[in-house]
Amino acid sequence: MWKPPERIKHALPEATWPSPAEAEGSRCFSPIEIGPVRLEERTWVPAMVPWRATDDGFVTPEVLAWYERFAAGRPGALVVEATGIRDVPSGPLLRIGHDRFLPGLRELAATVRRASGGHTRLFIQIIDFLSIRRRPEPARFLQRYLAITDRHRRLLGADLSDEAIRQQLLDLPADRLAEVLDARELEALQFGARERVTDVDQPHIRELPQVLPGLFADAAQRAKQAGFDGVELHYAHAYTMASFLSALNDRSDGYGGSRRGRIRLPLEVYRQVRRTVGPDFVVGCRFLTDDCLTDGSTVDDACVFGVELARAGMDFLSLSRGGKFEDAKQPKIGRAVYPYTGPSGYECMPTAISDTQGPFGRNLSAAGAVTAAVRGAGCTTPIVVSGGLCTFEQAEGILERGEADVIGAARQSLADPDWFRKMRLGRGAEIRRCIYTNYCEGLDQMHKQVTCQLWDRLDLEEPDVQRSLDGKRRLTPPRWSEHDS
Image (cartoon, rainbow, N blue to C red; front, side, top):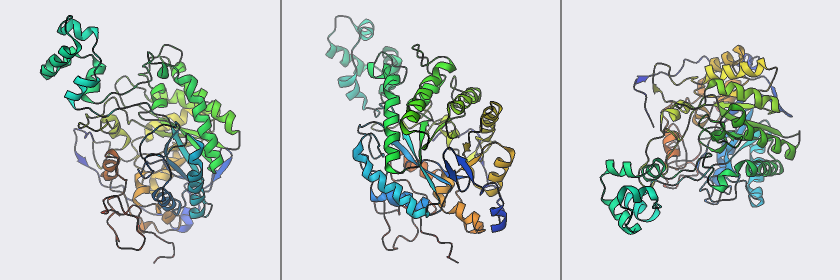
C-alpha cells in the first residue's frame, strides 16, 4: 500500500465505554427506520470480501461460519460481501447471477437470522466489475498478445512482418518501447489490460446502460427470494458503477461527461431494481464522497449525487472514499492491479502510521457535507458513514452533530465482531481494539482468506476450529458470550 510522506504514528483514540444505562439511552443504540425495515440500533458492519467462496462463487461452510460470527455480535445491520451479478467466472467471490446460487444464499440468510436471534438486519452488496488481466510476462505479451497496428509499422518499419516487428519490440530498451507503444498498450504491459466504461468502441462496453439495469434487478430479486432484508448497490471504489459516476467518465452517449450524464445509469439501475423488488424490500447504495484522484469526482459531486439518489427513493446511502485503479501501484508479474495500493486506496483504508490528519474519522468531513446537502434538499434518507470509527465517543458525536445516521465499522468489527454488543452491555473494557496495521488488507490484496492478526493465532487447538488453507491461521475469532466473566 502507498504510504504518506509524513510518517506519524497515531495512538488509538481514547475510549470511555458506556455503562449499560448510558448505552441504553444513547443515540448509537437507538432504533432507526431503513426503508421498510427497522434497525434495533444504529450499528452497521459494512461489506468485506473474505475470500471464502468456491472458485465458482458458491457459499461454503467457511462463508457461513464467517457471517455467523459477525451475526453473533448482533449489529443493527450486517452487509454481505460484494457479490457478482453476472454469471461469469470471478474466482472465490460470492455470486448471485443465476438461480443455482440461491440454495447457498438462503442458507446464509438463515444462518445470520439464527445466530443473531433475529436482531440483525441482513443486506447483500451486489456488484458489477469489468475485465482486468494480470500483469503479463513482457516477452509473452509482446510475442502473443499485443495486436500489431499501423502505429507500430510507422515507427518500426512498414514493410516488416508482424513477427519481425514483434522481434524489434522485444529488442527495444524500456524507454524506447514506451515511445512505440500507445498509452493503453503500455498499461497492458506494465499493469495488465483493464477495461473502462469509456471503451465505447467495444460493443459490450457501449451497451452497459442497456444491460446493467436488468442484471442488477435480477440479482436483487434473487436476494429477496433468498431471504435477505435488502440489497446495497455497489456504486463505490474501482468498479463499474463508480466509474460511471466518476468525473473521469467522458462518455458522449448521455451516460458521461456532465454530472447529469454520470448519474443517469445509477438512477436507471435503481429504478429497475425498485420496480422489480417492490416497496417492501430495502434498496440502498454505497458510493464515494471523493474519488481522491486528480481530475476525479470531488465532495461537490458527491453532494449532488447524494441528493439525486435520495430523491429517487434510495432507502439508505452508505459513504466511502477512494480505492481506485487509476493510481494503484504496479503489481508484480502474474498478479492483478489492486485498487487499494495507491493514494486513493490509502484514503479508503488509512493505517495508524499516517499524515497529520490521521486515520480516524477521515471521511467525516466529506460525509457531513453530503448529509447536509441531502437534508437541505428535504430528504430524510439515512446516511451510513465509516472509516476509522472505533469508539463510543466517536459514534455519539457523529450522530449528535448530524454528520450521519448510522455508524459503520469494518476493521474494528473484524478485530472484534462482538464490540457493539459489548458496548451495549457495558463491557467495553473487554473489546479487542483494531490497531489499524492493515494486516487484513494485505491478505485481501493477495486474495488470501482474510483474518485479523489480533486473533488468527489464538486457541488454534480448540475443537472444530476452521483453519486457513495453509493450516496456520484460524478463520474466525474465538467465541465470546455475555455470560463469560
